[in-house]
Length: 314
Image (cartoon, rainbow, N blue to C red; front, side):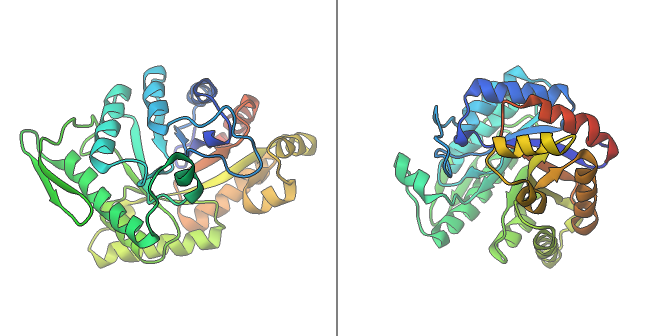
């Protein structure tokens, strides 16, 4: 679609979507030239929607899509560190990477939505403990994938201990699948990104907030001697594009949002308006990937409009 900025589709299936809904969107994204199909990793709906027919598991979904797509990249924004032990997660992601022929990316975060943990019996430690565990998870997952074939991996942490692990299976991608880290934490988040991230992602923030956080990540990279240019910069914005005011209003109404609020906080307007806003983001933040949050999964014409009238202008 674009030589310089890659557009990716991002879905929130906990709001109410089946696997077939996601498959239809992923295939359409592939056919219309988008770079990737990503999904959230949540088990409980948010806001006033019913959430029916209920949640789908992120990595089960991506395993299915790995076999039913051929080009589009696949990943999570973000897998919750509270949901899975790091060793089994490394196995699952490596397997889906194999199933996709090397198209998987792992977005990993601490987990934050307490209500879904309560709803499904998942432990929800304090924020400090979640970050401590998260740091160990990053070390373990990258350590398992990075262990040379035939060697074993050991890890002695406060929260996790691994002994005599064969560190198998290996992902297809070398040295490993891209690892995405994100969020607005001012100290630990940039430090962990500098150590582990291939991409740093900021969801649903304004352009000035994003620019400041990207700068913190760059400073954290400099502090450990890593070129900050090695980390891809990306953002997530809700998508609502219409060829005219009537179409724009219809799409905003379909997702229960106000047009002017979307223009302010998201990526909304006519194709030309959206191109201009993307240009501002690129100029002020240096992003090279943009995740388009698509909330109405039945409206495939929406994706087609952006592919036809926004992407070629970037």
